[in-house]
Image (tube, rainbow, N blue to C red):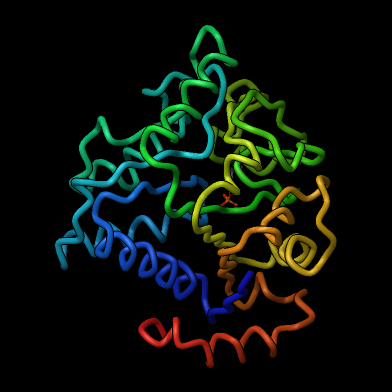
Amino acid sequence: MEIIIQKTPEDAAALTAKLIAYRLKKVPDMTLGLATGRTMEDVYAYLCRLHKEEKLDFSHCHTFNLDEYIGIPPGSLYSYRYYMNRHLFSKVNIPHENTHLLNGMADDFAGESQRYEKLIKACGGIDLQLLGIGNDGHIGFNEPLSSLRSRTREKALTPATIAQNAPLCGNNGDTMPHRALTMGVGTICDAREIILLATGTTKAEIIAKATEGPVTAMVTASALQLHPNCKIIVDEDAAQCLKEKEYYHWIFANEPEWEAFR
Ligand code: GLP
């Protein structure tokens, strides 16, 4: 695992977007795992800019989103399909049929989860998975105590997650779903490369727990410590509680891999 600390949230999002763009240019038909949430909005805005100004080409890639709310139709303002169309898909040249999300309106959630796992495999597995982090340490919607080997399935959301995400769902107890379909921790960790982006002081404590604390199902993001190719990109606010900041800065300054991005 590598931890990269950037000055501002904008810098952290820009570095994340540049890394994605770099991989996409090298392997235009790559399979990208995508995330939602406020933190990702700047990443998608940057990618859209690269598409517009530098012709970054999305026409051959496939995308798989981490999760989707149960009971929210894809056309609803609050669905993750709507979020993705709005922030990325409608602004770049990705064919609609290459963009995959779980169907939160499916009749059979176990069947829908299996379909998704099979589709990811059929696309050759995920090359690069983008992640945010919930205030309770979730990745995707893998809430505390999710098995660290879990696969795509239905999950109940915790009160903390419902409170965190309600503003994106009209801040209304009626519109904020209590259940979701999500890739499992095991599904996420099968990705060849992972980038987790977190910004702001509200993420500081959980980032320290997930990266410098023990690997535990109580903080599912801590499973990333076992991943062979995982980068955690944070701004200074989200890095506040990290004990080994100087070491992380030193690595970033000395790793040749980062030369093109410093
Ligand atoms: C939701 C998503 C997570 C995401 C989190 C962070 O809970 N299921 O995948 O990491 O939001 O949201 P934000 O960026 O708004 O803090």
